[in-house]
Length: 344
Image (cartoon, rainbow, N blue to C red; front, side, top):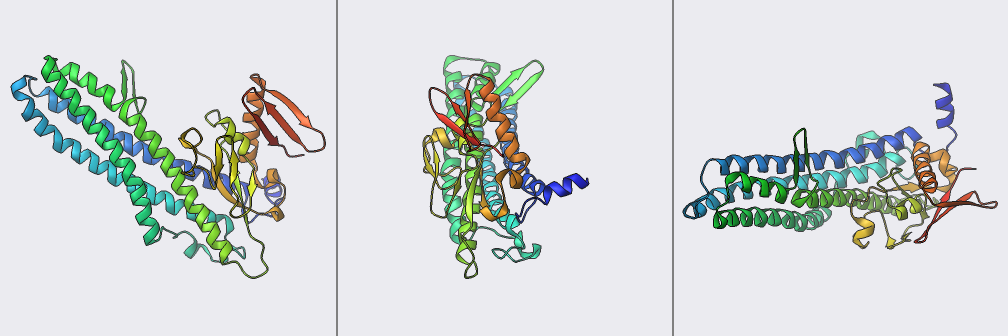
């Protein structure tokens, strides 16, 4: 315990390594909870459709009646998904702004105490923009779902297929894998696309809010106080893109973009990034000051996990070299060069 406290005290940062790790875990959990609620709605829809289709015959004469019964079910599901999405994105925005505040509590940048630190939400303008941005994607998902289910049912009526066959086809539309001892949602179909959009936009909302909160704190800082910088934090696991591992630890001043293989970004999940650099991104932007100490001493396990992931990929065929005197490991492939600044 004593060794842990001494390690935490080596940094001059206003937050401890464990506090940072906790905030990042909370951000991940927010995304996981939102996706779980979304997939539960798809599962509920799938079961409701199955029950409704099992009740009748699929004769051409019954087609209009069945479609008339299905439409309210599809609309109700779409409405619930829309509400879930908007609420999740608003919570993500609040969490992103609060993350910046929590990391700076007690400093001259954010001298306020916990009473006001955890209540930062989107302004009226930001809320409207967020809802408009999210709404387009929700409409895209639910309309694709509605069209896919209706087309499947109509084709079944016209071809004389059984209710069981229709339910199997709807399973593929919705995106469920049913095996004898295994059921997975979000693996294919509409639910898979929806999950990608959910994860991407929730992370974008968190990082955009944190980015704007930091700009606001910099604008209101006391005279003579240096501008805070921003740092890109990657997630150190095998799902993270090579280019995002390479971006880990990049430090940028206000107004300067982070550099990725596929383009520049003001923060992780920046809508200006191409899809291959943005979809399912789980990276974070956090405030940074060089006065806080060495990166590894400030970030702790967050830094170590990324370093371990890079070294693991090196063992799988990447070449590793030290840059003399700089403490850099360069990992080269035919496609790109990744740089990792180790603690020395």
